[in-house]
Length: 304
Image (cartoon, rainbow, N blue to C red; front, side, top):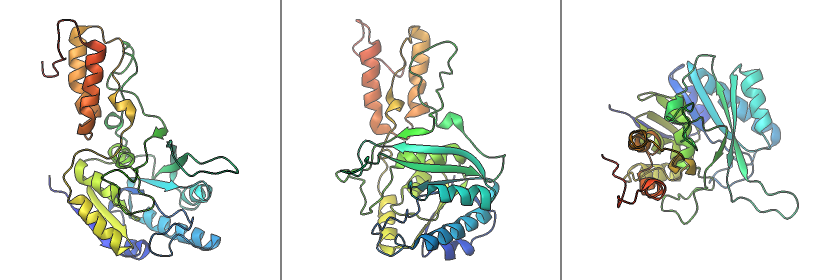
């Protein structure tokens, strides 16, 4: 299937006004939090009321662009998330679905008060009829039980992914780069192959990289031309796996005691959970060998 990845340079509000109504299946975006981060412009240093008016304006355009079956995910810091919630639900009539917490182990250090270790993501839908592909985002069960769905469990609304650290090869020159695996989960859950995904604040381009590799059409809007060039370079790189991982995806269920069932399950695990994380397959296979290798085997044959 041919897909299109578009990156458009300019102010998102002006660009969105020129897009067709009802043309977008999913919006996933990480707007400025108004915390005076340096994005190469003044977009993150607004007066309080100015920021709220700006947020209301671009979210109103988002509502116009989304199809009736569409979904929107908005990253937001704690200072303004309640205002964004109110705009989406009260002002624009979106349907609240989930308040997702992204937990990370390293963050801002504070000596007075508690250091933040999470960001939040609001998930709203345009109507009660929307796409949600649970099978595409399940996580492996901890233990095999006949009553469990061995295709996996719902990942819940607390997500633990590592930051994209400065030492990683995929680190971009962007102050708030988000892990690709965050976008992966949202895009797989709330869109289908061939759908169109919009990111009005494309930043480091993680959302477009995920669209590119999961056969979605991606539209990224970015005001900083330097970031646009970085995104283009990123999209041209060979794909070796998304740059972060929910570590639960490599776990091997306990008590897979029946050899026939165990073989069937383990052959499916990689396709079910590690399709976009080939760099994690060896870790999973090593865990299988450690847990289920018999005295007669030198390794578990995943192709048998």
